[in-house]
Amino acid sequence: MFTGIIEHLGRVTDASRRGGLTVLAVSVEPPFAGVTVGESIALDGVCLTVTAASGDGVSFEVVPATLVRTTLGHRRPGDIVNLERSLRLGELLGGHFVLGHVDGLGRLARLHPVGGEVEMGVEVPPELTSRMLPQGSVAVDGISLTLVTVEPGRFTVALIPHTREHTNLREKQVGDLVNIETDYLGKWVLRAIAERGAGGVTRDLLERTGFATPATDE
Image (cartoon, rainbow, N blue to C red; front, side):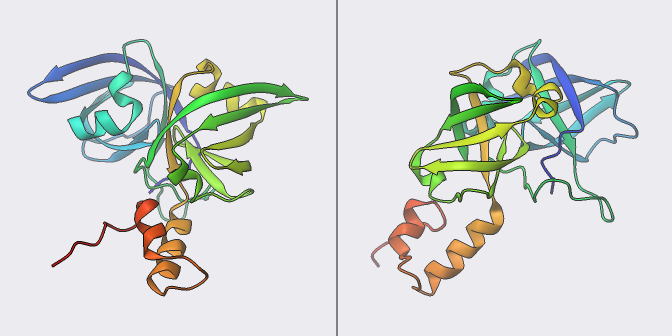
C-alpha cells in the first residue's frame, strides 16, 4: 500500500524484452536508501516488485497484462517516472491510501494556468468518473490529488508548483496518457451499497463500474 506522495523521481535507462517479460531499469535521484530485492515500489502508480538493486538503480520485471493496462508499455529510456516505496507502519499518511492497482488510462486534455496553480483536465472512461466525487481523491501516475470537478468521462485537479516540480507532471503535455487509480474506499462503499440494493444502486451499476462480474445464466 502507498500514499500517493512521490518520494523520488527516476529516469528509465532500459526497457527491454526478456523471456516474455519487459525489464524496466530506472536510475533514481536521489538514490533510495536500503532498497532490497523483493520489496514493492510504485512506479507511475503501478505496484511493482524490485528484481535488482544496486547503487542508484533499481530494476523491475513487468508482465504483458500490466503493459497493456497501464502506461508502462510506452516507457522508453530517458522517460521520467514517479517512484514511491510502500507505506510502513508508523509513517505519516500524507495523501490517501493507494494500492498501486491501476483502474484505467486517462488522457491529459487541458493544462491551464490559474494564478499560481495549473488546472489539469483529464479524460477517462465514464465508468471511472462514476467512482469519483468532487473534493475526493484520485491517483494520477501515482500522485495523490484532490478532485475539483467531476463530469462523465472527465475530471479536473489543481496542481500547485511543488507538485509539478517534484513529479513527472512537469514533463507532461496535452494528449499524454496517465495511469488512473480511483479511491479504493469509495469502491468498497459502492459495492456494499449495491449488494444491499440500497440508494438506487443496482447490480447493473456495479457491473458497469467494474465492481462485479456480470451474472451468468445457469
